[in-house]
Length: 75
Image (cartoon, rainbow, N blue to C red; front, side, top):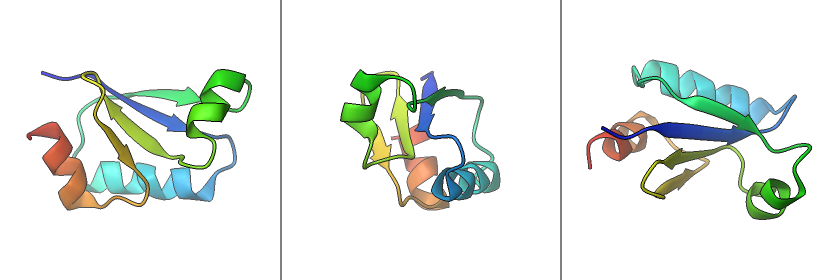
């Protein structure tokens, strides 16, 4: 089983939409990481957030939908 992390920003309407998609997909638990105060994460994810990352390194950039989310859980 994989662990998942959602990289996001504070006050990000796209991040809110991503959370809605994850809820709609019945997504398993995930951790959230806010990139706002981390220069390295900002450099890596700044223009891509929200990004859903699987523990093996596979990343799903926004925009994603329920189908894409379900595929990342069960490749």
